[in-house]
Amino acid sequence: GIRVISLSAERLSENIPGKIQYSMQLSLPSGEVRRIKNKINIPFIYTLSSSPPIINVTIRGFVDITGDEKTLSTILDQIRYKKIPQYVFQTAFQYIVFEALYVVRELGIPPPIPMPGRERKDKQFFGEVV
Image (cartoon, rainbow, N blue to C red; front, side):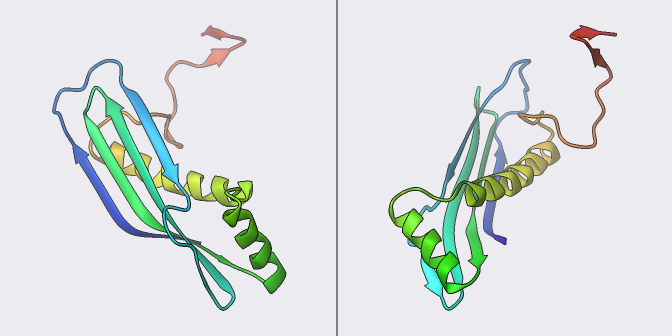
């Protein structure tokens, strides 16, 4: 599972320009990976910033993986060789980005990607707006 231990978000400007560029970074692991019995704790730090500077979001936490001895040993070996398993990275990234996008939306700033559940008013059909 994913455990968020710290979430910091700040709206830096009241003015929202027409075009915003976002920069996202996920550091996984961001520190010492720990193994406790049948669980691995992998720390992470996620940052989201914008240009022009209108938002900063930082999320810190842990990816907790439970499993059998062989699975955990394989994952730990991959992490030691700087090759975190793709499924671990993707699962963490999707969860964390969703949390960050929710916070960005709550601060009244257009998210970097469309949020689920919102319908676009213009429907695209074969590349044309209809």
